[in-house]
Length: 112
Image (cartoon, rainbow, N blue to C red):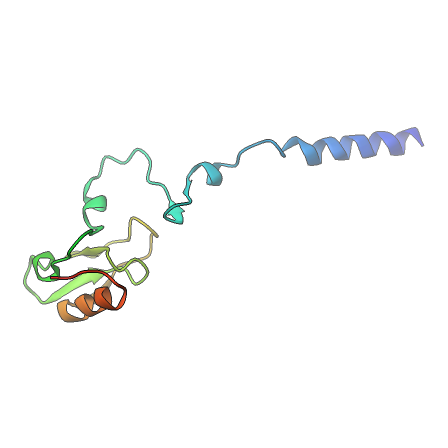
């Protein structure tokens, strides 16, 4: 009987030991943007591809090949180079400038 009671106490202490701990993924999660928070990054170019305000897609096409890379989840993330979205970490997909502009308009972004 005592051994059984002791086993229950030990088991309960293991179960409740982690209740007050904050998990790493909770600390690094941005509830406003529903995505991970970038911490300690010295690379400012990642944040430069998140576009705000009126977006001029043609000016993003620096190499003038009439294509840009755009995030299919966060439409306002645009670049002239391949890469990943700093908001959701998805790979950017290649679109024509016209299609990228249409994607923005369909998702209520202002375009030039």
